[in-house]
Length: 346
Length: 233
Ligand code: SF4
Ligand code: SF4
Image 1 (cartoon, rainbow over the protein chains, first blue to last red):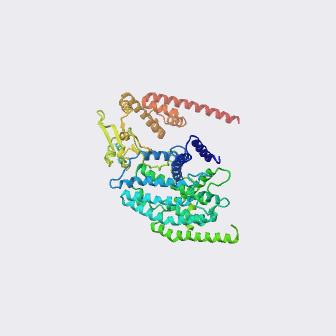
Image 2: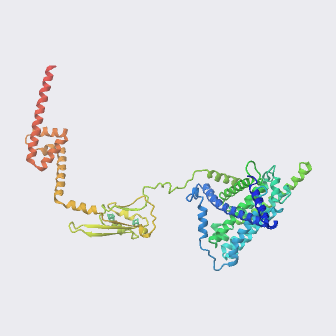
Image 3: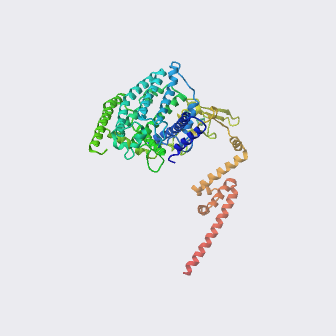
């Protein structure tokens, strides 16, 4: 079980080279297959996640949630997806058409790109980048542009307001996000995510870096536009923020991208702080799924507990609390490492 | 400490996560409705007297009816009654005004239907109603029911004041007392005498005399037996 997918990939590439393809082409085809698998996983995940979020939020509010379509309402999301696909695609006449139409595509592409570096098991990643973590952070921040495109292209005051908020929020939370991961990088000494996982063989980084974990969690919530930091959407104030003018499948793409981002960030959190794919008894790819879903459930829990905070509080929290704390954490980590070396422990 | 409230909040939602749902599980479990819940209007055709109070009181023109004048009794006759429920605002004015309580709300709230026309409810005059009317105008049966009424009245009078009633068929006071005692102990006798008194007075007198004689004989027998018993002691 453990090496199931790795072996499958090896068999496939072996078969391709035996067909007379040069290794480069075989690798390209393999990469393509990997992407298709990733996209399938994402789509399946979204179906489960949307259902799960509705169910979990219902339980938090002592309701039942969707329970009509299929056992426990599991087919509800599929029905919703079909409904969204068949809806009219409205482009506002005053919109900047090109930007309006490309924004959702850009958003989803950026979200899917995050999966390139996430180790989904032992030796299971699309590309083993040695600057994986950096790649993840930089690609992740690109989604700001997609939201700004959507807000600007819609030519609607609410959309633009939402977009401006999202830019302000994401740019300011990017800093504590990157800083909190820096502590982990300092200890493991690598930006490669597989190396970071390997460095947690004995002790998970959530124990060594609790402050980093909390700051990362908060910053990631803001990056994901999830409650209580869902200012760019803010249904009650901005009628959906940057998504206001979108309908049907375009809107669904935004939704899809948000959940894709959620899974990616949760998977990164599981990788960096919770020991990645390591775990006893079960195969590695199952462990990462379990851990990712655990983190996702915590995200749900936080979202359905706290009310949305005010924009200025959000900003001041980032600059006055999170940035100093994460900087302090780096200082502490550096001092700790030197202390360790001085004592001869590592 | 800062952030204590956040933890507390998370704890509260965590607790609620495992609590039983408090929502109404409607299609699976029917909701408990208050006794005066206004669901669907119900109409009882037979009780309606076609007074038109409901039709006049409805602010939304939901209700309408058709009437006809009966040639025989010169009474207003209700032919059909229509409730176009889609315009109803459940104000209850119709039900409040009805003197016969024949229009009222029941507890059925599942009123959705596929077509607008299906919401409209039309009540037509039931055929049995006309038949029953014919029966009641039929002479013989009417008389019979009249007689029955008289018999009932007589029976009641007998119970209340036997002396006065019985004096019509019996002459001696002693006989009257005997018979009234007999009637009190046996309802059948009372019923028979009342019936006969209405239908045929002479026959009633004869039967009454027979009853009295029989009672007298019985009494005489028991008296003598009782005396004999005393002597033996
Ligand atoms: S409840 Fe009010 S609106 Fe409805 S039928 Fe009666 S009087 Fe008319
Ligand atoms: S008020 Fe009552 S009795 Fe009068 S017409 Fe209406 S339903 Fe019939």
